[in-house]
Every structure is written in C-alpha cells, then in structure tokens.
Length: 119
Length: 112
Image 1 (cartoon, rainbow over the protein chains, first blue to last red):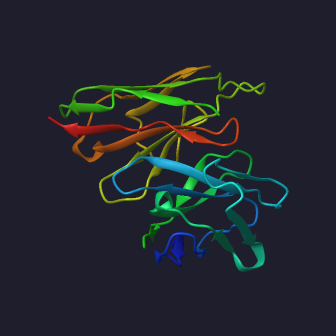
Image 2 (image 1 turned 45 degrees about the horizontal axis):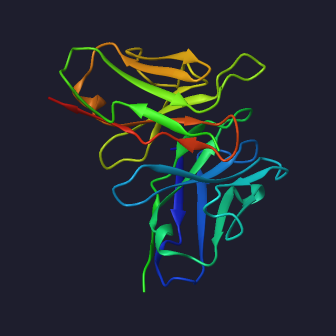
C-alpha cells in the first residue's frame, strides 16, 4: 500500500523550532522531487518548499525563506522540514508530497500533520 | 511571483449536469517544450488533495474521463462533463513553471 506518513506536528510557541518528518512506504523517493504544502485552518493550499531528487535544487516560498529548511535521505526514503523562528501564521496542516520524476506536479500526498504556533 | 486566480469561487451544481471552473495566471505557463505547467487538484471534504489533471490537459491515473483540462498560456479550464455526488470538494489550480509555485484560491463545488 502506497503511503506517506508525516510526523512531528504539535503545539509550539512563537519563535521556537519544530522538525517535521515524512516516511514513505510502498513507493520510492529516490528519483522524485519532494515537496511540503501547507493549509491553514479553513484556508486554501500554500506551497512551501521543494527539494529535487539529487538535492541540486531547492526552492522555498517567500513566507518561509530563511526560516525553513528541507532535507531528504534517499537511503531511508524520508523527508524532513526544519522549521525555525515559527510564527502564528505558520499554523497549518503540513502535507508531505511526492512529485513526478521529470516535472513538479504533485502526485502522492500524505495525510498531513498539524502544526499550531501559539503562546 | 505568478499569481493564480480562479472563478467561480463557489459553484453549486446539479448531479448529471456539466460544470466548469476557470483558472488564470499572471504570466504565461506555456514552456518551450509545448507543455503548460498548470495542474488541477481536488480536495474532498476531510481528505488530502489529489491530483486530477497535470500539464494542462492530462488526466492523472485513476481519474474518471468526465474530468478534462484545457487551455494554454494564461487561461485554463477544468470541465466536468456530468457531475456526480462524489465530485464535491474544493478544486485548486497550481502552477509549477516558476518557483515559488503557487495555487489558486480554490473553487468550492457542492450539490444544489
């Protein structure tokens, strides 16, 4: 069964850090781009960041640039998102997504993990 | 950044009837390889989003053929030939031509 499982969400105070992880089962990460997409409560989708299969390409949304870092371990079929200097507006469900081998459309989505930034 | 807009933002539909959603981008999404870097996603209530259409007009695996995508450049359309009850949810367009990638605001489809 194809599955992406995010973990690491929770409640964190503004200015603190949190690390999200994503583990894959039934599908391979190695040859594909990986993204994080988030959705604030009751809002639309916001693309956050992408890392290419070979780690030569990383891009971030302006809203998280300099604060969030994406990383991957192809040997372990895992993806991470290090989130620093968290703000109230970072409160959202964070989805781990696997893309296509040649293009960046988003094929496999995890169930998401909720991050709440609140004092 | 490329700005994506959608219309309508709310679309009540009648089962069996057609439905259409428009998506516009602030810059052309047509790349030199002939593909439009525009994709459509559906988020059903309580679920994660799912890919419907990629590169403007290609149905994703398992997507019923009542869904179709068309358009080029800056104007795109998602059409449902005959709406079924299971099609309710929020439809998002997204551009992946240029980072940062951007989604449209979403179009909520529900049954009249």
